[in-house]
Length: 158
Image 1 (cartoon, one colour):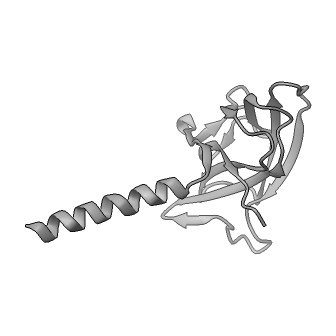
Image 2: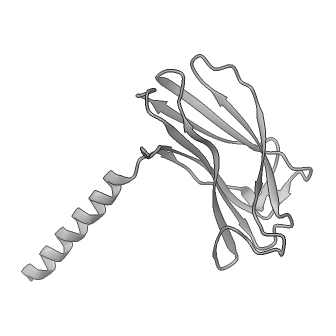
């Protein structure tokens, strides 16, 4: 009986340490209804920056099914916050190799990606920032998109 308790306590400690090592300030995945991502349903997340001296990586979490018919995706970004004027940025991300092999991690019919939007980014000041991501492809709705979200992490010191 005591061995089981030690195992359980060890398990909880390991899980707790892994959670402490995760430097994510936010990590969202929003389900896209009917796998149809429309222009009018952007993904939004708010992050509270308490140390503007640190560098951050901002990612888009993205999942699509095998029925996704493109090898790329165009996204439009808005970063809104203290001392920032909204200046939308359009950016392309490759999702597949020229031969059609998906670059994302596959599980069954689903492919997952973490697409880097900003790397080693320094927010101008402490405060709350809203990140908005819109699909910016010609198709509206964009079919076969399962989920999309935003992840902000403290960049590793290198």
